[in-house]
Length: 348
Image (cartoon, one colour):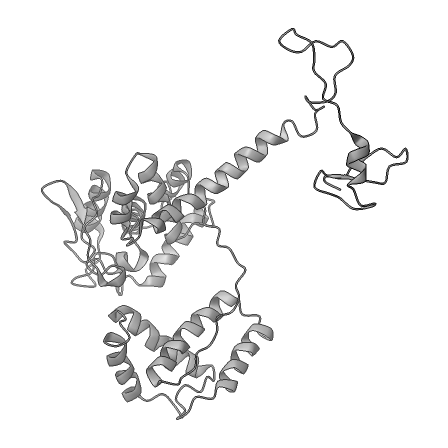
């Protein structure tokens, strides 16, 4: 059996009402369902066979080596379909040990992106306007794709961008710098191709697509020597730039369209944790293999303040009594030296 258009239409009505999905997410789910059906998932069957669905997922993980992150996207869409069909069972998610590393570009790296030029001046003007919006207000990729003429404007308080269809179909109007507005305005007045009557950013065949914008950013990053740059990493750059300049976390969350301030702080913590870890390790590396400053002092040695050096006494017999032969205890010592003295096994 194949998935009939009537079934997709009923799913759409369910998703927009009982399923509480946005129109964009609903369309994405419909596309995914057609894709999954083409891969052999029996989603159009009168009674969806659980064993068959799980076997196909297991085949994708084991034989095709599809990453768990990708399979979990499939599981999300399949579970929506199962809810719609009232199947009474769901599919568990795959365990994903991958931790996303999302380094935000530095200001120096951002300048390299700005310096990239293309053979066609119109392409350069459009791509720089796109990069400016990404790095200025942290706009999402699909939000940029959906921008229309007039959505970038100068209001009573200055330049802004009107995001009509944000995540969750919510509208917001984040501010822009004068420089970003000038780049977008110059692109519209001189270089924009009128292949779509409403779209702000266009190609020779119409409005830019989700994949087209991603390709612009990755190709720009590759030319700048930053092949890891993506649209979402430019959003992280905007977050760090706002916070570095003293903007409050609540204000940054409002500009980015985050419902929870914790999400904004998660963006920040990824960057700060990496920087802190590197700084601490490098600081420790300078003294790791030097003689310890706390080593026992020689008899009569003076302390730094000029007074007598106090050398702590250690009851090695008591320590050795607490150590299981050949094992490391909490003190870090083990029994196994040739002369019967304790042996430090840290790092062994």
